Image (cartoon, rainbow, N blue to C red; front, side, top):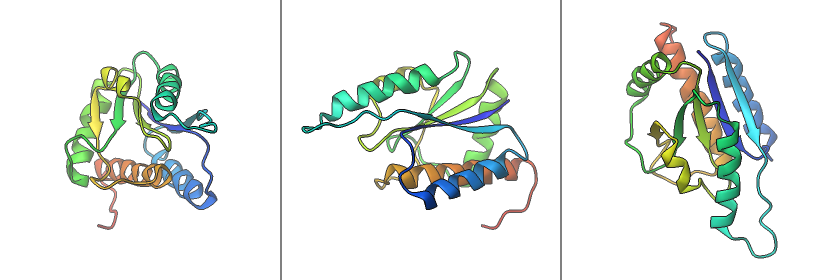
Length: 156
């Protein structure tokens, strides 16, 4: 079993990137974890959000392994507490023959076509988060969930 965090575009903020790396490293103490970055689409002079989301969505789909349990990070899903997320992650890890892959879109969001491949939807907040912050929140919550499942004390 493995946890994969699939992100669109390289981080343009070193502090967020360090935070994500720190939590992925901590998570890897309990279960293999990795960050996969797919290339973001350049917006051009007149950004077309739908075109950009479609191109980036295709890259995210290509980065998924066929047997990955895909979790779409999108505000439209059912909210969970950290404890509920930990229990659900345990179930996803048990169901996945390969890995649990969390997909976080870029600055223009996620292509709606990704919903067809997703096995679950995980909102990180009902508020709109910058995609860099969404990455950090996800990485921390994944670590918190894995630590909880392993019985490690982690402050609330």
